[in-house]
Image 1 (cartoon, helix red, strand yellow):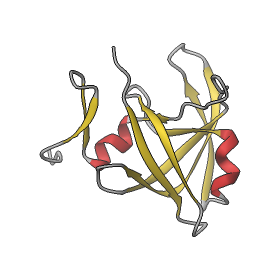
Image 2 (image 1 turned 90 degrees about the horizontal axis):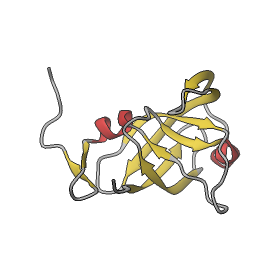
Image 3 (image 1 turned 135 degrees about the vertical axis):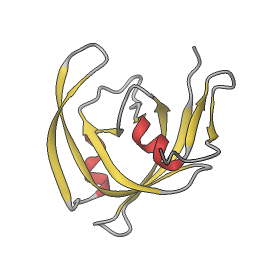
Image 4 (image 1 turned 60 degrees about the horizontal axis):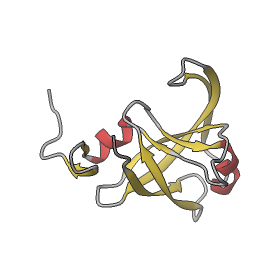
Length: 128
């Protein structure tokens, strides 16, 4: 199975001028745009922050913080307004691997092309 990585620009709407451009691994099993807790300060103070419990792919329960609102721009797709999730991550070879989950993918109109290993535009948004 291939890996799909998307370039994303994140802007904290409560702290004008604070943004971060990242590459994130597309993970349709994840719900949020998930970032390492180590990056939280770089995006400033958020209007809302809420502690949440999460279940990982290995069934482990961990804590995270949902923060927002943020503007999220997945390269090649429309901007959306949502929240980001910060969790403790261990860097792999000095690099973190943020996750782009299904909520943002659906909002911005992106679908996963499993054959071409890329994101493609959804022709129509659901209204059913």
